[in-house]
Amino acid sequence: MKICILTWLHNQNFGTLLQAYALQRFLKFEGHDVVDADYLPSVKEKLLNWAINRNSFDLFAGKAHELLNRKKEHDDFGSSTADVFSRFLSQNIETTDRITDTDGLVGLRGKYDAYVCGSDQIWSPYLLNRNFYLSFLGDSDKRIAYAPSFGVTSTTQRKKKIITDLIKTFSSVSVREDAGADFVESLGLERPSQVVDPVLLLSKEDWAPLINGKCPEPGKIVCYFLGNRPFYRKAVDSISKELGCEVVTLVGSGKNAVDEQLNPRYGLGPDEWLAYLASARFVLTDSLHGTLFSQIFRKDYYCFKRFEETDKRSQNSRVESLSRLSNTEDRLLDGYDSHMNATEIEGYEKRLSDLESLITFSKKWLLDALEQ
Image 1 (cartoon, rainbow, N blue to C red):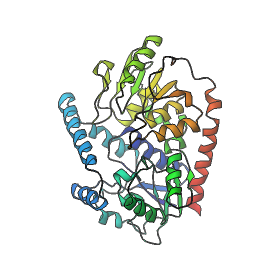
Image 2: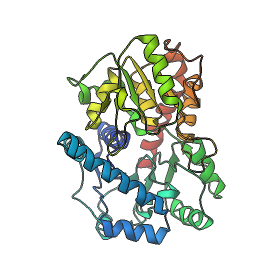
Image 3: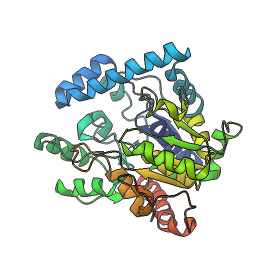
């Protein structure tokens, strides 16, 4: 079967690109002919989308801040993180030619047996882009949603109406989080199936080719933070003191290091980032994908909630849902806990048995959706 996937490929985020890699790789393993649509909206396209969907101005302010940080990284280190992400994309993910606007996406109509919009927060009301709901396709084109995330579920009635009408065009719909399933149901639609993030469709052994020979600094306490809540540093110091290990911090593209004294590592590609996690002694993170890969590689870890519970834009539902599904609620913290320690996670395999069952279900769900 010829399949075209549409997901984010160009936001220079480790987890985002690795989930795109995983979904395509899984479908190829199953014998399908798969490409990702290389959709990189032009500035004009982004501005038009922002105006049409009445998205928040904060979206552009945040992106501008990241662009300034990326320029500083280039000036300080003599290389661009865009280069390493582009290298990873070109070497590991098969794509169409570059598409910069909706008209280009319309050109994909009728060329594939099925179209899949992939995971991550591509269905976020905050970042609403109708193209990621495959709105550019024709009536006869088959649409499947595999594990998209809404990120946040608080939005305007206008956007709820738009999202409702778009979801109705799909032949099969699944989502990644509990909160996403609740949100779709609240729109008056049938509750969708809940499936795992695409990175879990691949086993530890399936990820090995990406990281073989790239074990940069084994045995470290590896930190990967997207936020910077005050208790992070205290928790890092506590685990570091207990284990007597050096700390390294993996800094995402366009982000600021939580603390310059925590040995930040800049300019990493997705494969290098993955190699750090795979070779870590202990992982501390507030990232969904940082947590997912800690579990895949069976690393001892703590995941911190990145948002205050009162934050209307909180995305904590992602890690909360994962901790429930993987029976690791004790490894999810909303503040510094004086009882936290670096002991090994007891009964790791038994804890993850429910998650393994959901992985099996998710694979079957996707393959059935394609064959229906």
